[in-house]
Structure formats: C-alpha cells, structure tokens
Length: 315
Image 1 (cartoon, rainbow, N blue to C red):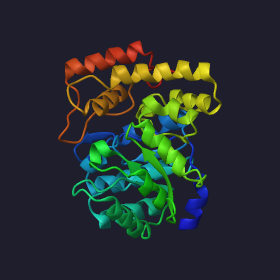
Image 2 (cartoon, rainbow, N blue to C red):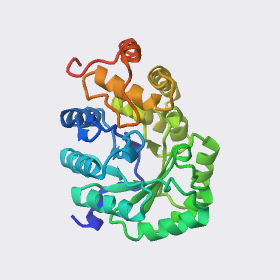
Image 3 (cartoon, one colour):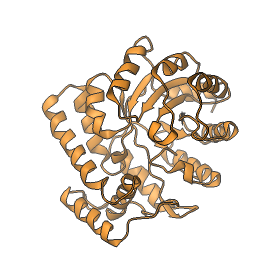
Image 4 (tube, rainbow, N blue to C red):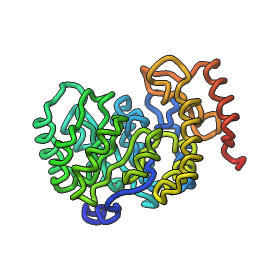
C-alpha cells in the first residue's frame, strides 16, 4: 500500500476516542500475545475510532526496538484496517524515529505520533527545524504529541501553528493538562479545519469536546472503551445532562484506579492491574517499574468490583 492510500484512509480531521494502548508483557522483552489479542478486540468492541500504540501508556521508551516492531506488526495485522492505527515514533534518535515510521507504514498503520526528543532540551526554532527535516522523511501522516511532564519540552502554540503548514502533519495530542494552552491551539488553528486537536487527559475530555476539540486519547478506554465513546458522543451532541453523568463515571474511575500506590507510575500500574483483574492481559510492567504488590492489587481488585466492571467473558 502506498503513502497516498494510507492518507486517504485517515479521516481529516481524525475524531473520536483513540485509546493509547497498553503493551501487554510477560517479561521485560516478551509480549503477552494472547492478552494483546484480547485487549485489541475488547477496545474495538467498545466502538473506538482508532488505536494509538507505543505511546506513554504503551511504555514505548522502555521497550526494545525488536519488541516495538513485533507489536506494530501484530496490532496492524489484527486490526486489519478496521480503525486507523497510530504508531508512536518518539525517540532521541532522528534515524530511529524514521526507522519506526517506515516499519509502521510497511505493517499497515495509518499515521505516526511524535513527541519532542526528550534528552537534550531544544529551543522552539530547533524543534521546528527538526520537524521540517523529519516529517520530510516520514511515509505516513504525523500527529504531534505535547507531553511536557515527560519530555521537559513544550511544543509552543506558535510552533504548532507553523508546523501545521508542513505537508503531512495531521494533528496534535495535547497531554499538558493546560486548558488555556488547548484553547490557544484551537484559536491559532482555526484556519486549518482538517488539523485534529485531541485531548490527552481523560479528565478534560468532556470539556475539550464541548469546546470544539476533536476527541481524546484516553487511557481509561483500555478498560472501559464504551464509556469514553459514549462521553465523546454526548459531548459532540452537547447533551449536557448525559455529559455530566458520564464524566462523573470517568472521574470515579480516575480517582479509584490511578492513585493507588506511591509513585508517578501509579496510573500505569493501576490500569494494567485493573486489566489483569478482569482477565484481559498481564499486569507486568517494563523495568524500572514493577507490577503492584499483593496489597495494592487487592485494592484495585476491590475498586474494579465497586465500579461494576465485569470480567471478560461475563458480559
């Protein structure tokens, strides 16, 4: 399939719920293949509009390139173009980002996702030049990824506005949690109606969509995909009573599942633990992180029951 055919398969702008898929693991360099298959079918059954692999929730920087390539092939093969697959290519190496993008294209992905290189801090003009050079070599449309808590860098709104004119840049996922930033992006991109502006933190999904955002890259949609799709639909329709009801459920899941434990990895540990509790996939995490110990696992298990989340196969 050539680049043009991939681009035609990607809605412009891309809208809806695009879960950042967790990477099910059996050990530090082995995929939980059966768990990955169950997870993909679970989220697709929830009506999601795309999948994003090798992002933050997918633990991409902690995975070997061999495993990343294996994951790309397996996900694209199983999804079989039912929804667009977006592949994270963030790396400190320009060449490796381009290599992953080519692998994604060959496997059948529809787009790639790129955060700023996260070791040496770059200036905004340097970032813009980097984007100009890299995107010229990429075979798929690119979504930028603003994740300052992890990369130490912000794609300033003016940088995004300038990059939006580059061929192949299709949108942005904003995980800053800063609604003033999000609104400024929307204002600057008003003359680019096909440029997708997606919200990262699911706690801000409803607000973002009500204010004209195109959707969300919501981690909780790994666990309850239909909930996030319903919230997106309600917000798109401006059904405020329904939005309020569904947003409360999203906040309940966030409060229960993401804040068990002591470290900033609690979000990921909680999400993977909950997925294991309902029989979807292993809760193994790539090092330096570890799965929850028994006491924390029991807390998540209790929350899963209190939230009424049904184990796989018991629906």
